Length: 443
Ligand SMILES: Cc1cc2nc3c(=O)[nH]c(=O)nc-3n(C[C@H](O)[C@H](O)[C@H](O)COP(=O)(O)OP(=O)(O)OC[C@H]3O[C@@H](n4cnc5c(N)ncnc54)[C@H](O)[C@@H]3O)c2cc1C
Image (cartoon, rainbow, N blue to C red):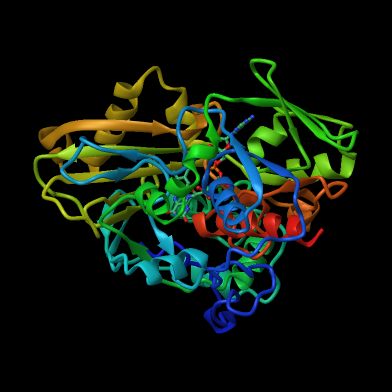
């Protein structure tokens, strides 16, 4: 599945920015020379952004510690072993383009990646079809003026009939959004900034293993688990952090990498409180519900990608790019559909809803061949609370305001704080971690 092919204006893609960018001086350098900064950095969150920031600080000989609320590293990168005869990604699974920090790391380590060339069919007017009469994404691409209205609204305004509702939902779901919230204008603007390349890649290992090998295992000794940071006081010279057990930690600089939902919920109390403009900016960034459900079948009766389901707008064959024989179809559920499934009583009810839909598409084969299922509901995960950030109608420059450091003490990283159009991605999270470290070392 080429996640980003929908509305990208390919003429605007100019290649990787990293080789020449002053923000990423570490990437090509194996130098261990120390910076002038000699204080202690505390990183809040051990997802990709936090782990990578730690790795960069370590390479510069800086004292750092990573405080992580859950009992594992990885954040939105987690894996599921034992369900199938190949490992599954509970969160991120595609490398979106190779021209990035991550692409460079992969290239240097010679990790094998496979281009995802899978085919797509559509569930349209209660039938599986190979193509659609109209292409909504092309329609949006060809607009001269991109209004700051939602995908849903633009569809309605321009006579994309009800039959397109879930096709449009699938497109918005790719962006982790509900079509009623995703901005046509700002999503296109951010797509223009995208510079990592157009193809999607998979690896036979999981994404979790990949970051583990490349940098996470090198900093894991500095991660303190089950440590929910809930207070940060940055009034005095030393910053004081407090966790759920009331333990205090002192730092000279803090890098916050928690998902934007955690900042929106006010789960961390800052003293002094942030200016209203900062809080407004946090709230203008979208991050909605998201879920992945893995369905294991005796037979592979389904297509590689199925778009447009009313229960789940996007299904993908998990076997692509993996080594194994088991047949696993993944339901990728975002926005309102994820909210609905999340509200069902239990995982069996979620599986049943999906199997019923697939039965309709494939003549009862889903229930005939179902062996097992696994539900990963990211919305219910207490330290994530959703899928990934997207550009809500009205977002404007909010990411920039949200990501601005405070008093040269508090720095913001994490995918939602990426300002190069690479939010929502693992490599975007890494870039944001690198930016925070770069800012600290320049002080
Ligand atoms: C279903 C799904 C599919 C995806 N698919 C892809 C894909 O194919 N390709 C891709 O590139 N990206 C994908 N993504 C996005 C990608 O996973 C994220 O962009 C990236 O992993 C985010 O990393 P992060 O470090 O910013 O945040 P996170 O990974 O969320 O890390 C934040 C960490 O902060 C911790 N935390 C939260 N609150 C506190 C607190 N109070 N105190 C201490 N710690 C705290 C959390 O436990 C977590 O470990 C997907 C995401 C999801 C959910």
